[in-house]
Image (tube, rainbow, N blue to C red; front, side, top):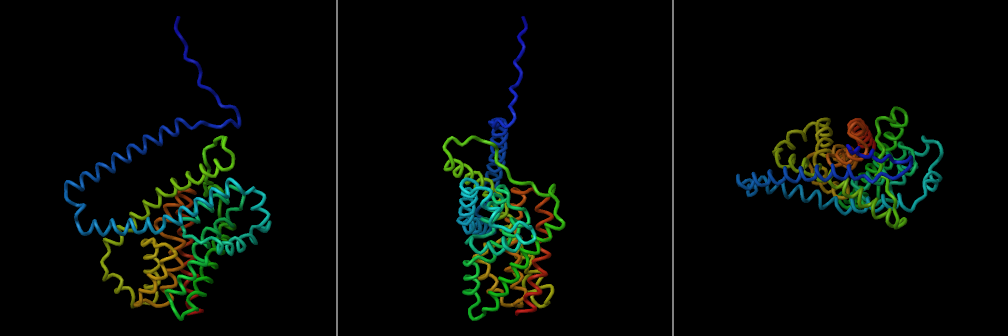
Length: 339
């Protein structure tokens, strides 16, 4: 008698998915990626490219960006896991005003309490959305947290000694940009543009601490991969663009603003260190250097990669483009007013 294969088991509604096929696909994808990486490294070794001065400079810049951002990425993932595991959803919604338009500035000012860079703000913003915080408020927090926290403002004051107006200008321009983007998303944003971050359903038999451990580990591995991709892109720009290009743009007021805005995007410097880089660009106007410090923590290559991996590529394309325009406008107007 011919045997009939038993039907595939059907999960009951609400039953947790074991995720075995998905884990198998991820393992195969990781194996293919490692094989491609090994082939590239082997080819470079045979061609002697690993000993080339340009590759050594690229490697140094790439590693420096990752090492600089890694502690704050760890901080952000720990905060993200703690929010998901220990903070009830109602506790977050009660802190913010019920009206989304009023919740945006409150969330923007709340960014002062997180001493981290943009790498930390992305997973935290994802956890806030998972816990029921409206997207406009979470996005305002995402932009404000790496730009207005005490560490960044202190670093700015140290980098620009005797210029408190630069610190005030950075604070004002960054808050204005974050709130404007929150209100802009509230007005024009669509739900289908934003892919809310979700984790695979799993039963945490170890309680909240197990949920915290699994959530923090998931966010770290997920965001860390995109951080490396952004760091590699930034290192490539650093190595390939000649230093004389900077001097060509410094003479024009408007071109210098646009050039430093673009430079902030591709350099991907951590927000705790970008003030010292801006202070070293003495050939540019104070307004152009302010725009550099406003754009950098909100739109750079590694942040674009992190947002694309967390919220979707469509969201990252729209949100980062709009944020860049708003940050340049707010930074320029603030610089004209205060500097």
